[in-house]
Image (cartoon, rainbow, N blue to C red; front, side):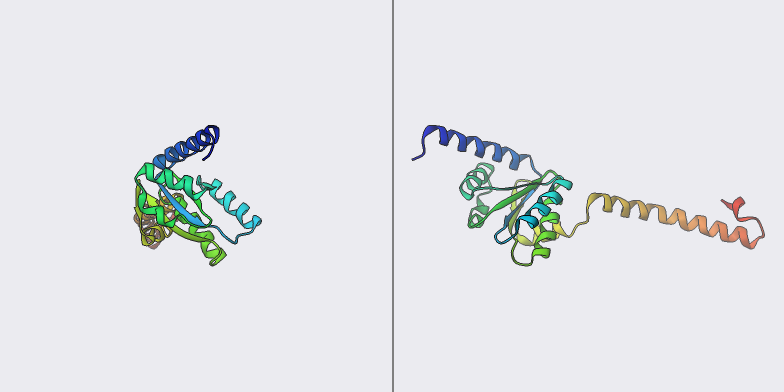
Length: 171
């Protein structure tokens, strides 16, 4: 039986972890066994760049936090080495972790995840991982919106050139 000081410290850790999980849009549970320090450093740098909070957490503490959040379905995945990646952006944790899981081929595996306070199957985690980053999506939408305008400008320019007017006048 732990003494009162240790117990209160662990309860504070669980309370902080519970709050982080509740305030995050999504999270991914990972088995990180077998990665090197250099690979872990690269992963943490990539997580920071994408505003993903990544940390190694004891299974017991994470189990208490998940149970506080109503994510009891994830209890069975809390065995072995466990780390958690969470972020406000629902896509970022899955995308960053999935990229590293592909690079490290079997030494770094996704165990499960949650989205908006609910446990999700691996298919959903993989689907989230395949969504491009927000700036890429914004560029794609902008390109789609500008395509008709660009095409119209090209047509006007071609018509002006056929009629013998200088191309600058058409612009």
